Length: 148
Image (cartoon, rainbow, N blue to C red; front, side, top):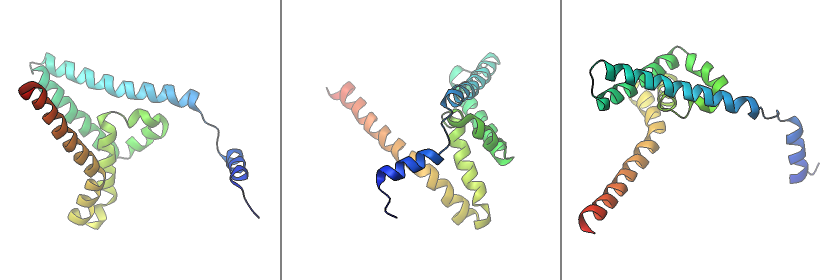
């Protein structure tokens, strides 16, 4: 049987599940907004308890990452992400989940060659591009403010 691209496209459309964007987008928005609102509540509580705003923001990131790692370890973050979709991927908790789930998955291979390798497989590109972008923006800042 000779399958043309058009025939393949029609066959795949017929068997593919229909998009539920009308439901998925608002749920992702609500969950992502809820995670960010939780972060704002934590920041406000910490700032209200006497921490400087910058320190409160730092501790908020640490707390949200910790919550994400715990939820990932107990298998609950996956269940939330299954229903919330991109709403759990966008905030810092999504990156934390990606790294911790890779580490948990590779635990049986050992700490150095298993966990360490898997973590940097996920985090490596973020570290690389983040570092590169910071150097480029730092040079641009220096040029604009001190040379030009």
